[in-house]
Image (cartoon, rainbow, N blue to C red; front, side, top):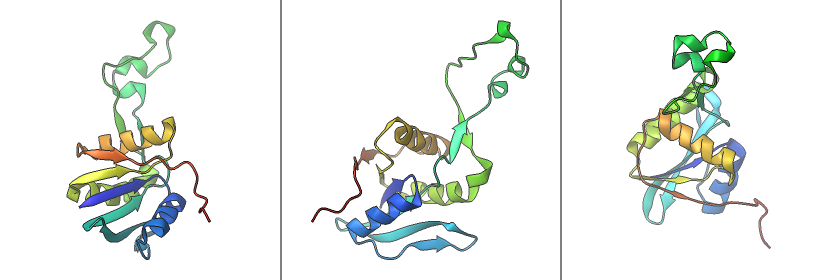
Length: 146
């Protein structure tokens, strides 16, 4: 199964329209979260979306207690590996996305084609502990060509 990930519902809607993915299936407990199920190149597919940033970097104090208080002598805080964590406000959406990532054979990153879009996808994969192979789709314009 392929999972296509868009960073927001409006982008997912446009992609779904272009791919003929049918109707969006909303999450019963959170209607702003949803997904599309369809066939893509003869393979089962899911198009799911975030609500912007589903994860963020953990606070500096999570790396070491010495960073709890601002003191010039302890900063900058540059860890060997940066860690991301789910945002509390978007946890329902992240759980749904993770359920699809877990079932996927491969992914398509359909976030915005900029640094922020790449970061959003990277953090989502990180907090979902997803290391599945993925491809990148580059969508610069949502205007339909006539």
